[in-house]
Image (cartoon, rainbow, N blue to C red; front, side, top):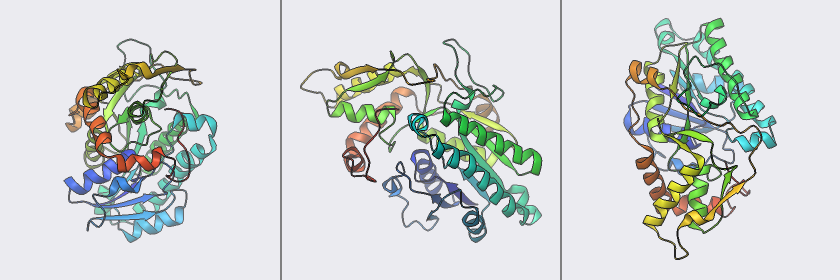
Length: 351
């Protein structure tokens, strides 16, 4: 298949691109605007590969999308391009509305125009895979409940509201126009090459440098952590075997409080690179909670597991070990970002 991946230079997108090139025979065209969180170094292993092409572009530009879909004779669209940092959405929601809502609309319309021109056999196998987040569901109490594909939407932040709107657009284009759309909603991803404004990479790098480890509130907020390579495998299954009009939740089954995550990272670093100043848990600093901070996320991924045969391979313990080791071994990737030499801006405080 010829696959168009949008946002394929970002964290999850680049993991998906690497997975598709390394583990399938599909051709991958990567369309990315190269905003601050896109790091081309994340795709060094696929540069020059005969089944890979990068195109710089904006999903809000429908003419470019239509042209690229035709030029590459695209069979599947995997839509990951999005603004995704909650704190940034609180400070400046306009970019989130433009990219996540308007951009998804333009992409759906371009895909619909392309699909309508395909021969019947090709049109029957064409797919648009809209990749979203569990944050659209709002939050859960501290009990055993989990988000299912039928959980009502109740977004809390400008980011999650913009993703909820894009999900509704994707499903509406399937129901109204018959566009063969599948949707997936994932829990918090982590792993190598994660931009260091997010909780896990920020904690790793701050701890390495003996700097404060900021934790919102008392660190009691719970997230279900999904290793990014497990997510990439799930995305391939959803686009290739998912049923149009259907939604698939993707979760790692690894619920941890934010404080427990930070403490686990400290303990792994203490074991691998002990600090002469003592255990790194001493660096944990509690800061004022952010507005509308969801208490708990937890995903029920049983539909994905039973219908498509997916299972997460990494536990939180194995995944966080791999992640910490990757940052220790790949200073050349994160050093320019850390020093503010990457796209001319400093990092935000925390996720």
